[in-house]
Length: 73
Image 1 (cartoon, helix red, strand yellow):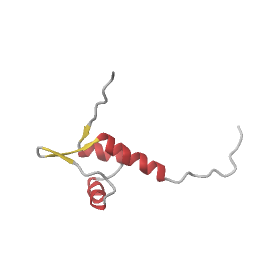
Image 2 (cartoon, helix red, strand yellow):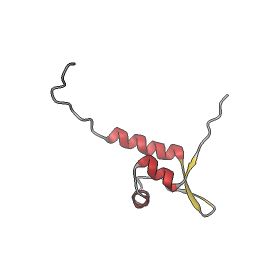
Image 3 (cartoon, helix red, strand yellow):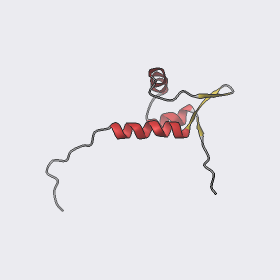
Image 4 (tube, helix red, strand yellow):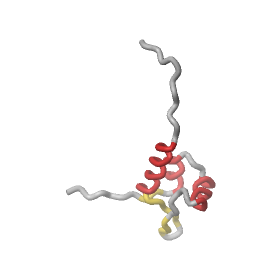
């Protein structure tokens, strides 16, 4: 009966996972395309599963590259 444990991420980890800068994160929050942080005292934290959902959505939106004339080994 394993319980799921949710993680809270601080800004440096959000930036590392998403490849965004701090400014890009806050721009995307204002645009409604990134989850707003929770306040924990003076800190802003993000729910890891919400950040992961953004990453997965963006991966799904990326076009696949076509290979031209793939060679057989």
